[in-house]
Length: 561
Image 1 (cartoon, rainbow, N blue to C red):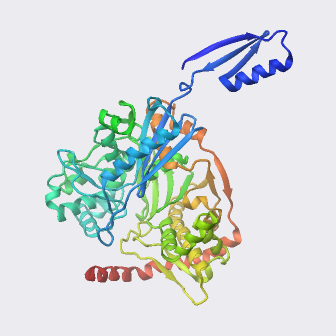
Image 2: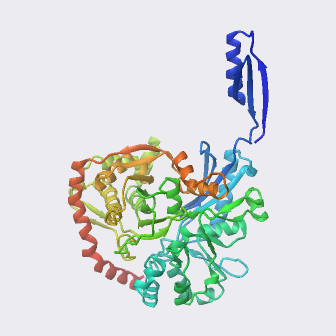
Image 3: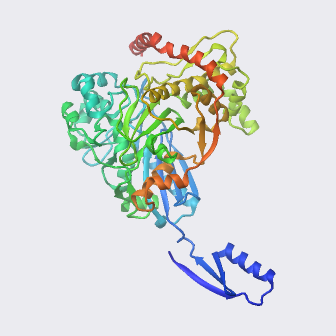
């Protein structure tokens, strides 16, 4: 740090002038120290105050770039969107080139908005949507569109993996069952359905790790994201060779796997030219989106739980040890924090259910909201607020894209149950808000059954921004919901990991404690909880009653597609 020391005498000056000089120099230069009729001004050169950290969060709808100073007092973000491809029912794909083009634009925008010198960026962290499959050939060209997390085409491949490895041995090796969203089933699907492409595969990467490759030229990943591939021995935090050999998959097609804060590469000349970043800037491992979000919201020690409502819904519990859910309803993954794990329940359509309702049935509200200058969701909540608890018996199952927790079922379907002539648009809205909260409670109940202490539930994502929806969640869970001073958890989380990996912070824990603070608390209403308990019992009974019908319906739809 460069600094200059100036001094001036204040003896015999009028008091008003003395005060003026001190206040002016303090505001203009930084620090003023007075002693023995002298004042000293500590002048810190602009740009040398501290370094900056860059976090990149590759989501399903867009990429967010975040630049923050070391104390997170200055945070600037930029977001660039890209399309989602759905070539068939239950398929979901994206073009990796769209991710990279969006990343380049987002980095340029955030550097421009922040006026930060790229040379002052000390490190870069990467967060991203998990489970996706990016296949590259020997010339490092993308072989096909990436199959992403919400794709549900791999049910048969997951059955094959389970039979080939054995259901219990599968848990022993990788801590999780074979699920349709995970990467392993996608790779087997390519092998069975696109053998010409499979034969050309040189490396496979997760979505955020493709961005790492574009930035650094390195093939690397880290333990939290790798946990969601089915290829990682989660307990030992390394690739499971026995699992890979059992499926006849060459371990060499996988990237090297690091801990999340380890520097895995540096910005190369080509990426520097495209993005404006300084060549040689360190890039750390980063994290899968949920582990990154957890770091960015301070969920780094046992006892803290996060409930995130974005497109998907996630209940996330940090754990000091490797724990398994006996019922296999929750994922057990490596945390982005060294030496820690986490348990996670994922519902695939949380905020996505509300967005579907808005776009499908409430298009007129968009026009009304635009005229009033408000968010359409505010008008929807006004309607829902006029409806009593339990939506007068209208119960919503939020399985619009299948489900993962607590039911790993790609055939599960969304349902409105209990519909009568009395129900209005407000009932539909409230039932969706309550149905999503019921789905999150499913995972929270499993966490409680595992005797994991719940000291605090922190809400994040779009669902946490709404006081109305927070109250519904608090009442249904009978737990206080808190919010924090951070709104960009995933991008901020990997920026913090970059700070730990590059030595900006002495520890991740110290950085989180200093930066992340509780902002608000929403306490449950005991009477509301009692009412919701009765509706929750009905909610819990519906999936078992409909499970077989869901499967039969999927077969009919597929037959006539």
